[in-house]
Length: 113
Length: 109
Image (cartoon, rainbow over all chains, first blue to last red):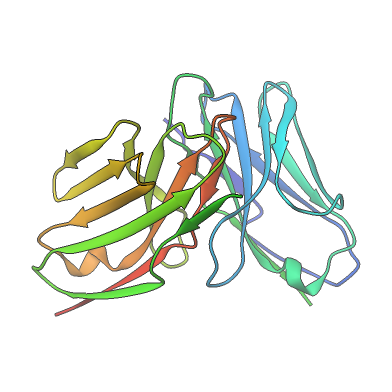
């Protein structure tokens, strides 16, 4: 069974630019979660999508947004990039109601210069 | 408010036992998780507690006391490969996970 996949693996952007990160959940999983992990820091919850709808969002500005597609894959968009957006962006998936475990993808390392 | 506290770093010796503590204050409680994260890699699931008591899984055990807002992860017979960060996370009533900053465990020979 394929795990959670994310693309791209690494990304370098300039301050002010926009970026789109992609995530494909494990087959059968309807929930997708996005997290930001700055170097040396803990996971910060960004967004939770389930069945195509945004269920919850963390304490991040509106320039962080995303969506979930009918096939349950998801995109995370970050507009007007700032230097402090440099981080590892992790996507996780789960079966919302019956499973307690989130399965993580390998992450996208974003560097903003 | 929401708060999860873990020690920032711990050091232990290969072959020994180490206990990593986690205390929490969250809005509702629907389970507590422990994840392991090696440097540069994604977190992987270790254990889940929703009822008070001890859950044992091989060399790893996790304990929960809901009344005290407290959990610990116990690692026995430490191996060098156990050097990693250990993340405590609490699932709130709305299914959202609140994560601690993680405990970096350093294993010395």
